[in-house]
Length: 205
Ligand code: AMP
Image (cartoon, rainbow, N blue to C red; front, side, top):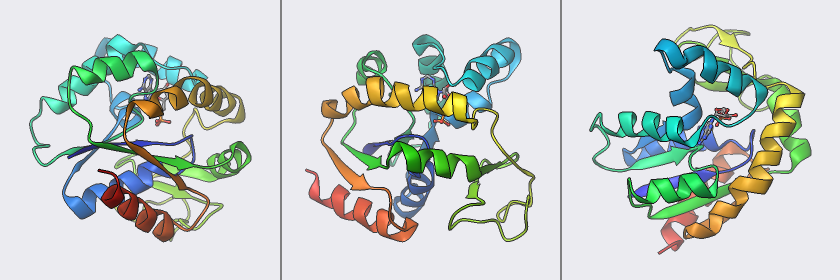
């Protein structure tokens, strides 16, 4: 089974994708994480685009995604997180894999701004924490999982965030109807959102 998790920045879709992937033995593929680890001559260009909050080109995104899928370690299925983000990408995805179901985790823009200002990410393993919320690290600045350094993402500033939210509402929301999807209220505890997702995946057929 292949799923897509949609949601605006700060909705917790990365956290939920990781939990659900772990529960069902799926690969969690985050387009943002793939791009943050691009190496070689494209590295500086990708970093600059991401820091502005803009989208990288569809061609590059699809190339990076295909490279990830070609590793061949996702035989039981995947959860895509952050891709597709527009209609052009949804069309390209059709030629790559079949999507069974999608979930949208919805939060308001004000809640997104509040959450993103507290978001910290592990430099080593990409685990996500929030210093304003329920997923605070046990030791300030240190990843609970691997001991790596926690940093604020360069694109987690208000200007870039507003740009990313605009893209989400204008371009990404248009893609939802391409899939069998259910909308989940993301302004609940992590556990409640997770159980709502499990229920919804069971109901979508
Ligand atoms: P995220 O970690 O999902 O918030 O993504 C961070 C940044 O990576 C975005 O603001 C974009 O610059 C880039 N990015 C992630 N996914 C995509 C995508 N599907 N298409 C183009 N750019 C993307």
